[in-house]
Length: 155
Image 1 (cartoon, rainbow, N blue to C red):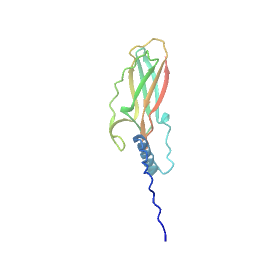
Image 2 (spheres, rainbow, N blue to C red):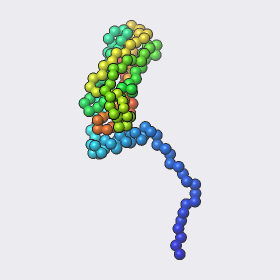
Image 3 (cartoon, helix red, strand yellow):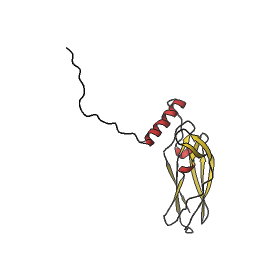
Image 4 (cartoon, rainbow, N blue to C red):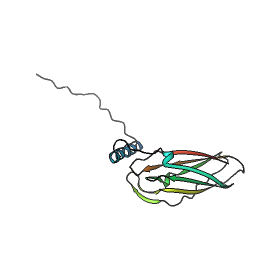
């Protein structure tokens, strides 16, 4: 006579995956299906090249040069200045192009060159300023990058 073994122990629940982890996995799977197993993607610092220059003691011009085949999310752009004594109000961002994104729905995006002016609320003439820009973008191949922070020192 044969016997059948059954488990009578407690049932364990699987840990729930974080939404961002699911999104990242979906992006990578989509890219793998489009490009094969070896997509040739640029590092984020090359896909979304950030630069800045002081126009005067109250204004910084920030620029993103977005490579062909890539785009930035408008609502993911954030800027900060160091030292904190130099206040950097929220900038007026130019309108983006509406895109129906497979992961985020209806969003505004930037392609090509994005140029904006950042006003300094409490500038100090001759003082060095570290401008930090946080951005997030994707490749048309279906791969989205995590938020990226880039810094530039200006005088």
